[in-house]
Length: 377
Ligand SMILES: Nc1ncnc2c1ncn2[C@@H]1O[C@H](COP(=O)(O)OP(=O)(O)OP(=O)(O)O)[C@@H](O)[C@H]1O
Image (cartoon, protein in one colour):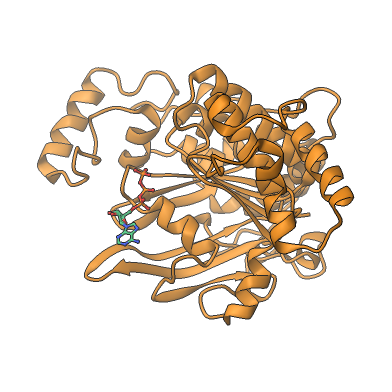
């Protein structure tokens, strides 16, 4: 199973330009999380910080007991091996065929024999549907295939955390749909922790277990998918509906009076239409579409049950619309526990963004995070 990544109070600037401050979230182990945000809000900077390519000036990123922000170069080298990264353009070497591209991390970072390298490369290429293309050069294949090759390369060191930087960029909607299915299928097969940065609303609505939004130099929200998909926060609604009215402007900053006037005009027209999030707080139903499931014949995603237990414990911390949407996704046994008061109401964990495993639980043993029955942090 993948490991949890605990981010606490993370702040990053370049010179006098602050990118974001005080970002706090936990990527639960084995779950799929998506980070949204307008262009330029620092999503790529966040991914690079997670793998230690950029150094935030404050805060911590703790994974398997190592703080990536403050650890030594030696520790960073070790912890980086737990990550697989799909860079935006696939970052393949143009002069190497796909086989050698995928084999590259194995030859670079391990002492495996060529026979072992071959076994692993062919296995990963098969997992992403690229069997038979080993001899092709990156320039000879489609953008979608290049992404798949980039994913195969990200898989060869058996990572516990996989970061996808805009996997959908440059792809047509059908290719994006196939890629999304591949991501869910891979998660079912390897149970690693996934974080996807994307602008694609369809991906955000159907792929992840958790959704976050970076906006105006802070993390506006991070939590179970139902929390964002039913949110009435103007910035969240604007982003998920991809419309002009709202706090996000061409250059990110908009005048408050202008936003208020736009929102009033929008409400007068009946609010957002396609996702069920309207002016009256309508939610559930279409607002939270079904999540993609693994393809037939693949194992179930192990993260699903772990997540159900986690969100059942958090149920009392959410507003009614989110709680209702989460309840609709829970199996009877967990609903019964929640309704029996096993998970007592407590002071909410801040914005539902951060949690810790109940001592003794399976998730606690693996370092994942859920609030305890009394919501201790
Ligand atoms: N190495 C760097 N040095 C200085 N500034 C940087 C560096 N890397 C990124 N930035 C700045 O940080 C800001 C955020 O960039 P980033 O690429 O993370 O945004 P993003 O949210 O991923 O955008 P997009 O959605 O367009 O990919 C930008 O203003 C960018 O110019």
